[in-house]
Image 1 (cartoon, helix red, strand yellow):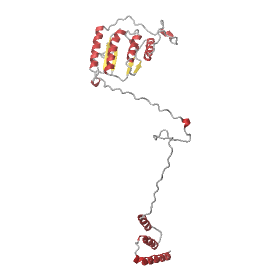
Image 2: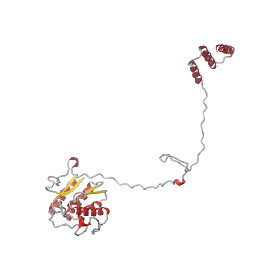
Image 3: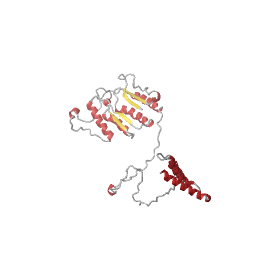
Image 4: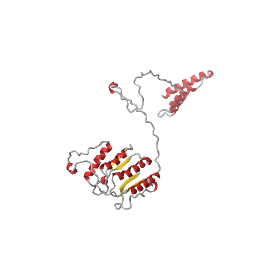
Length: 297
């Protein structure tokens, strides 16, 4: 949303008219307030306060940037308005009353000593401080003669902004603002209370104890350690293990075939079922195998 109070005429021809309201999605989001020469404090506030107040009501900005151009002051070399410094600063005071974040920036201004006066006073207004009109001694003191005061009185120049003209401008712009879609409001919620968790006293900590301060583990230094139990398991060899051994024996290299066969036969004894009728025959097989092994070795 842009709101502009400016001199309307030949300086920037074709721009800044009251009918310039924006285009497309930005329609009615541009508010142009055209002014004529010699506008004074009262006439300026007649437009500024109701229009800006309506913008704050309808648009509900989260922050405001206020450009404080000082070329609207009386006596400016290029400007053609007749505002006093207090009248100029009243706009800053009014914007502070809305209690939204406010950024003040400079702008035009071509009588340098009056620009310095204006921004000094408005800085005090922004801070809630009333600055004394009497100027203190400083290295540029002589630039502010002959009166050496902070404020500048308006001149007796003619105000070409008639009350009727100001009424028409204000009514038209308020009508445009009524067509602006209201900003969505957010419900305020109570802020939860702050809890002071305190800080750990490192002097009472055990210097030999270390842990990662970024760890998400909860460490209870007061709890005593409990004795733990270890589960033991005993694994007994199964028949499958013996079969694996036999398979490994078949893969032996560097031994005589007869020796390997004898070893395998000896392993086969473990798998033969004992039969009472064949006990003697099996004993003879074992004896013959042992003799053959001695001869080969």
